[in-house]
Figure (cartoon, one colour):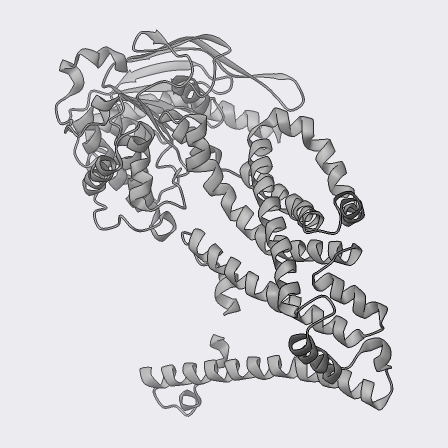
Length: 293
Length: 287
């Protein structure tokens, strides 16, 4: 950044004043911001515009790949005319509910098991290999079993979402406990802390950094779990709308449903970011964060 | 417990206290062996015997890797001896020793707690009501010169300030024994001298027994009543020196120029030098 703040006055031999430097810095900053936003605008224009142009020119068949204008129409239809399975809001609410319950269940279980196994070497050694095995299973297939076993209701969706979330949160909580500063543990132990107090004052706050970081990924997986389970068999939900549209070769509606879920994930993401900011307010601002702004 | 955490000002020396003997540390025949990752036993310290009288400030000086920190671990009860006994106040150490505080080289502060929260942890753990704990912590922050910094987080403080927080946190429970493992090792020279002077000031108010580990001979002589020299690995006590510099000693930086200081420092260095050279030869040979 600083290299771009070149003052033309200095090359002319004139003494640069404080206000000159400030002005130049502000100008450089403004130009950079403008450039970034221009770039950001250009990306969707090229991608969406290209897509629209290729499909309308007939180079790419819109029957298979949809078309941006078609997706817009499908979106409007979804919200105004509803679907074969009730209004879009009802379906959306059911999917969100499934993902949310799955997320909470999986996160809770992941944190509890992660903290337990992270603190107890014996338990960790006993369960370690089995957790590795369970982790290497393509868990999405469990969705088929859940749907067959528990029917077309909400429960199998919640379960699949929870299973996907569990492993992500579990591994992070486990690692978080392992990374706890042993000096801190020794310190509170000497001060007379009980095992419960060690967990409350040292282990859990320390592991929280890791757990919170995992929640971003975990929520995405909760949505995926709910959607996939709906595709495998459901009476309501966005996943059902997708699989129905796929059966009718209605790619525009598939894209529209995808967009809706993307918006939901983005909103959830921002809530998680808020939570992260609150819980981890003690952390020093990291370099990467400062640069990202 | 409640009595210890109550808010009495411990300006009176502990000598007249009935529980004064509780602060005596007696170590006899202490040996600690570890199992190396390869499964071979490694003797860290062998047959260490010494006594710290109640209210005495003892320093242990020795070459790197001679088992100084291991010795402290046994006194705190965090580790169990392989042979020999550690007695605190006449009773053998079983589990965590009560009334002990630890100070490490790395400041063991909670990065997610404020300065006040960090200092409060001692009384909180012993079950002091929150309001009293806050008042006590504020008082201690004032004593170490950090009034007004209660709401900062450790990462917002300088190294010396973090050390002060650690010191307040270690002393707030008014421990009868203070174990210090190279507490000022990572500080720059000026900050180190200031912190040493402050430690002496606080110690003179509370008079806990101190076991202070350092590799800095000047530091040991300036602070301690008695200096133990440890041999290179496996560590054992080689010599002990009584430091008869008068107390209160005042500014640590000034003592360093007194003739008696230099005399003692020379004597002790003569004893330490061989061990340092031998330890260096050992590590150089290993590498």
